[in-house]
Amino acid sequence: MSLAEFYHKTAGKKGVQTAEVRYLQLPRSSLRVVAPDESIMRQAASWKAKRSGLSLADCFALATNDAKKKASY
Image (cartoon, rainbow, N blue to C red; front, side):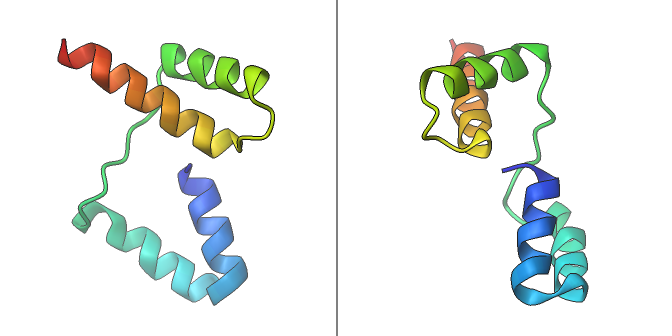
């Protein structure tokens, strides 16, 4: 999920103030923010093209996971 989508969905459900608080708490959470590089963006687009039923956020998650696995080898 992108940070923009996280903020937008939280603001829509819980209000802007809650979205702001949760956004500012992210660096202290166990979640890791990964900025997509060109390879991840291209892979996410490929996932989306092949599986239109997946959200773009899910496609980025899959592409990021693939990149992490490749880096581990």
